[in-house]
Structure formats: structure tokens, C-alpha cells
Length: 248
Image 1 (cartoon, helix red, strand yellow):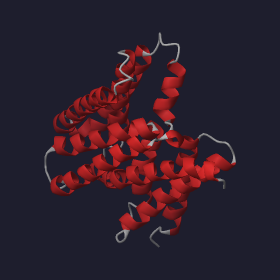
Image 2 (image 1 turned 180 degrees about the horizontal axis):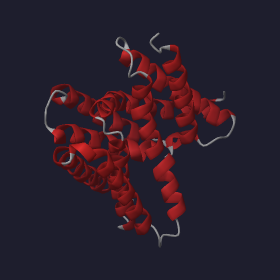
Image 3 (image 1 turned 90 degrees about the horizontal axis):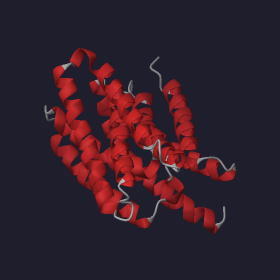
Image 4 (image 1 turned 30 degrees about the vertical axis):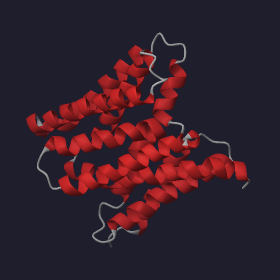
């Protein structure tokens, strides 16, 4: 591996570690609450905010883009909290519908954009190989703040406390790695270890870290899209772990 490849892979791997730091505990809570579509819905709503910011030609102001994306995600968090409180028996159906509607609205907003295909691809699969130092620093600060808040509020009975923190975590990660990888980071480690009674966090972290590491290496060695390669690598590692650690 030459120095150029290392200069690209190291920041991308660090980005993956930062995302896993918040997404593993959030993913476990998502499974516990039975709201699997929530991560996709919130990620898509956050992405919708990024699309709106782009249409308003605010790309030159990252702070405004972040504010719009975060506001969109927090609106989505409020909506999902209301759904879970008001319609618990069919919450997954409503949350799935929220995802479909927000995705459809995003496509409609981009329908007259000549660069729509490129924007949509970035939103779905991200550009993890091109993260910069400013993004890493911002994500690190946000991740630390969210983990501190999570420790304080994880036993809260408030639906919005969970969804609000979740929305802020997803807002940053969607712009960093895309919706597909956000979903995989939340669900694969949590799902592969949900039967474990001990060392669950350790195994989940190992799955996530190995998935990012192997996926990044494969993407460079075989000239593959990084985001989806990491998703596939993490899924395979998660499946192998789930089989090997299956209770007898």
C-alpha cells in the first residue's frame, strides 16, 4: 500500500470509527424499541434537508447546510416520537411510509437538477474516501457530545429524547458516508449480536470496525465503490459472527 492510498484510507477509517461510536448503541436501542425503519426515515429526512440546502445554493456555507439538515432531522424525530406515542401498534408502517414519502419528495425536488443523479448517489452511498480534517473534527466533537448526552438520557421515558439524539447523530453521518452505510452501521452490528448475553458491545464493535477496515481495503484493491463495499463486508462479517456465536 503506497502513501497516497494510506492518506485516503486512514481518514475514511477514522470516520468509520466515529460513526460506529454513536451508531452501535443507537442501533441496539432501535432493535430494542422495534423501530427498524426509524434510522432510514430519519436519515432520509436529514438528506432531504441537504437537498433543500443545495437547491437554495447554500453549499458555500457549511454551517447553514448543517443547520437546515439538523432542523429537518429534528422535525423528523418529533414526527417519529409522535407516531410511536400515538400509534404504537402500527408504528413500523407509519415510519416506513415516512421514509418513502421523504425519499419521493427529495427526488421530486431534484427532478429539474441536471446533477440530480450525482447528488442522489452521494446521498445514498456517500463519499467516505473524500472526508476532510474539518469533517472529522466536527464529527468527533458531535459524537463526544452525543455520547455524553446518551449516558444521561438513555433511561429517559421521553420518546423525543431518544429520537432527537438519534436525529443529530444521523444528520452528520449521512453527509459523511451516505444513507446505506448509516443503516448498515446501525443495524448490522446490533442485529448480529442481539442474542448475546455478554460482551455484546465488544463483538458489535469488532464487526463494525472489521467491516469498515475490510471494505475500505477491498474498495482500493479492486477499484470498487467504497460505501457499498463496506456495507457488504460488514454484512458478511456480521453473518459469520451471528452463526459462530449462535446459542447451542
